[in-house]
Image (cartoon, rainbow, N blue to C red; front, side):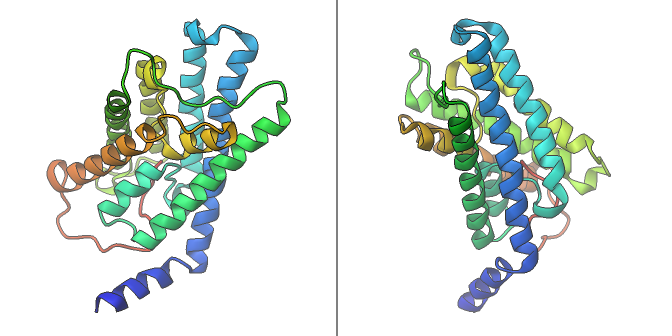
Length: 254
């Protein structure tokens, strides 16, 4: 029975609709990463000492908010608009998407991030693609916890802003999701970078050739996303009946 169920879920993950969802995730993640990393590089271009200039933090936070809201909106009705492996992981743990589908989402998201960073590296020859770094006063464990808290807030907002039981929100859902992402960057940018997105951190590290402290940008966000989804679905706003898992996500994510 288990084998049959696993095979059935895998078949659902390679249907035409599923392939459309993977393409949507690739495109939306590409646009998001391109805008976020591009804003960091633009800040360096306009402000050579961007690391100590508060305005550069504001620029990156605004880019995060705008890009994420747009990326979620354009793919919400196709793939769920995850744009983030941590959101996908939270949805998989909560049973909203199958594990095979989640793995294909991850591949799409990470490939899109690498391609976006590569495009920036090739076109902007005079600059290196920036990577997320941890402040000197923080440890890798501390950064992981911090990124976990940020991603918890982000994924919890995803669940709350896109829950159909709260009534139709339309474009307000993606906007709210973008706003919490921008606020998180403002709060923690100088400490951990405010990534909240393992794919974004992964893509920049691949192109830069540096994977230092990469674990902090995976362990924390994945745990935070999973806890947020489980808490919302099972404690704060539990469903009246168990929803069946489908091949692609219902609602939207980041």
